[in-house]
Image (cartoon, rainbow, N blue to C red; front, top):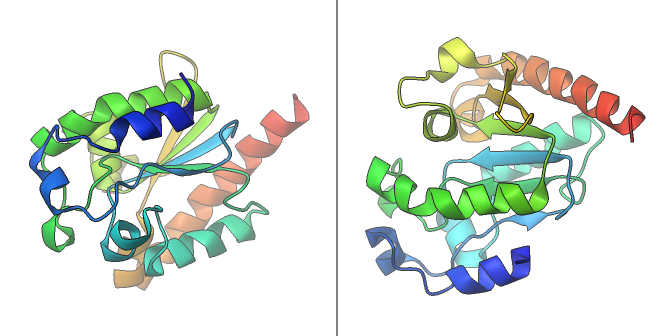
Amino acid sequence: MSLEQLAKDMQNCTRCGLSEGRNKLVFGVGNPKAKLMLIGEGPGKDEDEQGVPFVGRAGQLLDRILAAIDLTREDVYIANIVKCRPPNNRVPNRVEAKACLPYLYRQIELIQPQIIVLLGNTALQNLIGPDARITKMRGQWLESQSGIKIIATYHPAAVLRDPNRRRPVWEDFQMVQEEYHKLKGNS
């Protein structure tokens, strides 16, 4: 199965109630062979309208963060825990996330990234564990059973709300850049 086939298979998904309010399913975007994958929470209003993750204000900030470490959207792959917009941009609940996680796991299998950046608490808690906290775990490298290096940082929307989070996010992405360059040197 390809990413295109998976996206096509998901278009009529009704695994959870979020499907009832969506305009467009927001599958993911970027390089299907990316070494670096970024995973956020879920689509917002702009993403729901366009069908592309991280296109609103938080996405514009993410683009600037990537540019600061010499990367573009075309170099990475960007996805979310849930593929449909939660009402009023609320945090997706466990039932909604659990319904979507098999799709995200399949995306990860197909892309085979070597580094995953978890953007925010929702991504961290759904992929690492429900008791994980971004304030305690950000900036620390973890490794999946399959050898993928994982790091969590604040979501760009959190940085927009609290500018004091800019420096920690910058430090985290400098670590990502260093790890990414090690990979590029080995390929």
